[in-house]
Image (cartoon, rainbow, N blue to C red; front, side):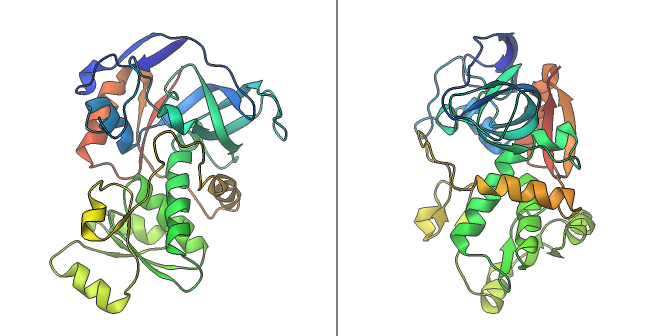
Length: 285
């Protein structure tokens, strides 16, 4: 099969499309013919070597944590899904990638809602899992007031909607140009600025979880992530919940940009800029 991959750590220029061994579904897994896969900051961190020592991957490595496509192989014991079904989901987290390819094996998945395009579905699962996991860790329920920093980004837009669906009041920080987007997702938008932390702490003291800062513990903050080598995906139930909300018109996946797989280097450059409003997605021919 063809796959996006890199054989050395470095800038996006190390990415190439080359032949790779086809994966096959193991017990409890499915394989899909990939239609689209989303980029996450972790893809950039792993490719650049920023995560070396924390996450070391065998080279060459195929990036991509989430994907959408058509089921073409069922692993032993799999029920509730059939060959030819359209699904979206996450690869085996122990491998830290594998989705940016002709075929990918999913560890968890849900039926693709009719409301999602392939691009939206391909970029949905990782952020939904992250959002669900962190909302669970914070105990967000109806009546909770939640501050989301960087609320216009890929994780932020998803977390906002899932928190609102739980009945929470969401305050989202973003630049002024993104306030209309946040309001459309149900958040109360505000700008970044000096004194924000103190103002929020006075209004709504509570717990803090980071999904991006590896030094969070130094500041007494919890870092939530899928630990390398973990076989558990704690926020997996969020996929089916988000899909149901999407078909009710209550959830969407804002997509900032779509690139063909051959243009993955450009997509990674945009991802590294941290200027995307919503999700960056690669389509697979």
